Length: 111
Length: 111
Image (cartoon, rainbow over all chains, first blue to last red; front, side):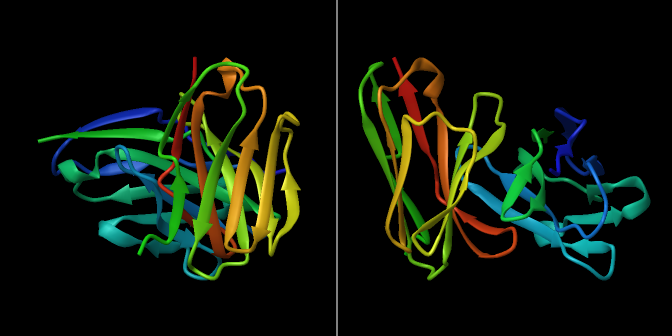
């Protein structure tokens, strides 16, 4: 079965700093990859997804992620974070009929 | 209109009690899920139903029993609640592989 690793557990940034959150999945073949975001006290929302094609995918709110097959990675990036990006970020991979989530990365952005 | 609605939002109960959490989606999706999010924010799938049929039943104590009276509803009944059942339970529905719409969660506290 697939698994997902997120190595950054807690990231603290100042506004306007650049962001990169790591995500690695366990094995290759055809993969469907996702980033979900959970703002404080809210439900999870889809940020972006990768199914196939261009390995650089763009999502909502200025986020993007790059699928690098050789590294089994799908890192999330944003060139300039805002205070409102403070949230928990989850990488996920589709495994047969379900999503397997990583343990999440807590991002705190200070003004 | 709320797409995936869960009730109740908060549930505090004593050990040994039986409780239910309800979930309804008005998106017309065929597949619904229950996920458990523990105190460390780790999300783990519990059950999945497709058009009222159980398709995923992860390693969950049999005190947990899902029920899907129709494809718009997926309820979760928990018998003999234990302290370790304290968590946030998220319902979700899916329009396609990995494309989940989550409910706002039910925070269950067992005392």
